[in-house]
Image (cartoon, rainbow, N blue to C red):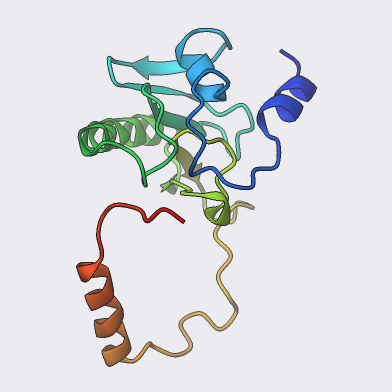
Length: 168
């Protein structure tokens, strides 16, 4: 499959990924089924780790559940637990293989967070001081701490909320 085909077929602009559960056309489900080639690092009954085809750095890879879940908002908690164990293993393997200054793990949940493929995936990205990749924080980040009463109020709101996403 050519780069152009991959970009046009699988990276169409998404309006919403939260309601996309079509595992027949899902890029990562096709990888799991062997319909699209991947450079697999490991796989087990529930998870698969493979190289990102657009790596930010050498060793940039992805960890996915084999079962189709859009993101952390719809994943079964047992699958999330298994991903956590395998994520620790994969992160350690990447660190051992490339000895970077650090390794970042990233999950984007929804279009607003930058999710492009509607299948839960965790980026494992080796990082080195001075590399070109990173989060972009506002210039005034850490200039002023949030008031404690505001932080307490937000924490209370989160504690009281359901762990199930609302249907909008």
